[in-house]
Amino acid sequence: MKVTLTPSAPRGKIKAIASKSAAHRLLICAAFADRPTELVCEEINEDISATVRCLNALGAKISRKDNLFIVLPVKNLRQSPTLDCGESGSTMRFLVPVVAALGCGASFKMSGRLPSRPLSPLREELERHGITFSEAGSNPLTIEGKIGAGEYRIRGDVSSQFISGLLFALSLLEGESRIIIEGKTESAPYINMTLDALYEFGAEPERCDDGFVICCGGNLRSPEKLTVEGDWSGAAFALCAGAISKGAKVSVCSLDPESTQGDRAIIELLVRFGADVRRKGDCFTVCGGELCGMEIDASNIPDLVPILSVVAAAAKGQTVIYGASRLKIKESDRLSTVTEMLTALGADISKTDDGLIINGGAPLRGGEVSSCGDHRIAMSAAIAATIAEGEVTIRSAEAAAKSYPTFWDDIAALGVSIIKEED
Image (cartoon, rainbow, N blue to C red):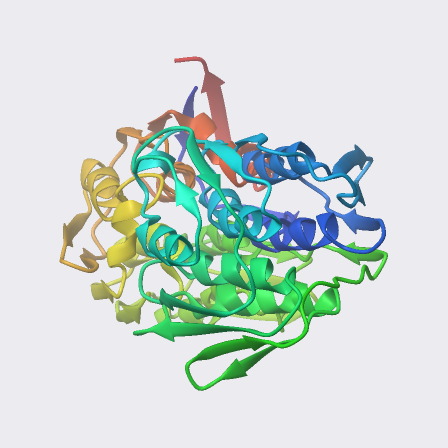
């Protein structure tokens, strides 16, 4: 699908979508709890659907009614199911160790760039504990065997999802386990979200100097009903649209100011850029200001880098983003694709080994860009289009549905003219 946007200053109020990061985690806990759980989740996207599909394949019964997931936990574990993860890295990296803990074996089917995204640190540690994998790079990837409670070592600088997956898995096993994290932990807020989900279901992993201790796994207790919080990652796009355009005023509601989501940092970052940011309850309003470039450590907020690059292009002076080398292994090589997208629109942007340098303040021009099949590139291009000097056409714009199915409707609700057509 192609989407063409006419530049305009966005104005209006929208509601944040449900956090896919929180939904993944709560669904997994609910699928292995002691009794059913109702999970209020206003919207679902492709990644959440992948997790639901895989949990049902393992033996859970998850159904959708209005804005609810009704989760009947696994009672009869299926042996050697095929788990279709789509392009969802979270789904696969969480469930590989979970399947290893269950001992049922499984074949993990993957799409897009997922087969090429790193798994080796997790694979090697599970192999050390007796799990057998099919040949590296195979699709589907098949695993067999069963792990037990014990000591697990994992690198912290490749993906926090490996650590989250082990936290889920070891919380299903009786006995004491320990996770030792080697090196610097990247994207630590996502691990905090995993802990929050486990705490909601009665698990008690404890932090220690070098990782975590899981003292008494094997008994997740359903709180019966939970609500998935609003998504700061998705809200960042609309909030940034309010920041970069004179005359813009954008409000996003249903956001928890105390959330453990790392992307809540967008508020602090927009203030540092110079935007006018106000809060009333769970609603945040952003208006444009005199934006100035700055340095940004993205090691805990990698998903914000594409949209922060758009803000940086609108800000006067230089912005340096660092600590983002892991963006090379996302749905696209995001350091490359965001550079290509903004360069096509006339921005002065270049890559470094672990980030980007943007010399902002010059007008963006209209033109045609590609999302490269990456949801965050598609949405970032849309926000850049609001301040371009001419129309911007985005190819493969349907990629936004991976994390934010209602994105184009929400942008239109803010007064931005959008024309959709099939490629």
